[in-house]
Length: 165
Image (cartoon, rainbow, N blue to C red):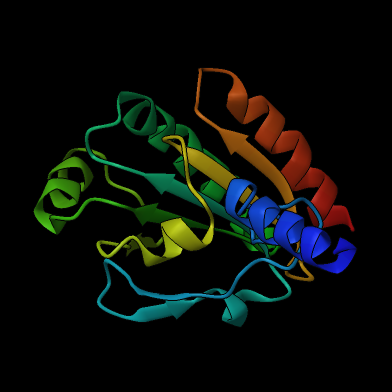
């Protein structure tokens, strides 16, 4: 009887707490993915092992996402030569919406398109924007949900820490 109760409890906990053990836990392995970029190439997270990678999930309809983009571009320009990159992952179902935003906000870091939501589901994205910072060993080290002016100051501290490691 205890075995059945324990098994039932375990199964219920996985239904109630499905986020346990996924790519969004601090110090867990960042889930690998491949997405098509705005350059037309497929980019794979695992190909950037050895770099500090900031993954920013954004949408065209998200005002804070658009406000954050110039700040991310400044970070990319400042730290890319030190082994840092950014993947801007757009979650819009219609790429044309993302392209409109990108036309008015030129960015030099790769923009990837997750129109099927497979990567955003893998990373359990529940807020826009969401920023995940991955260390050189491919581990999730920091997660930020949402954006307000000034958040980039915290990104700078975290990026510098990981670049030095």
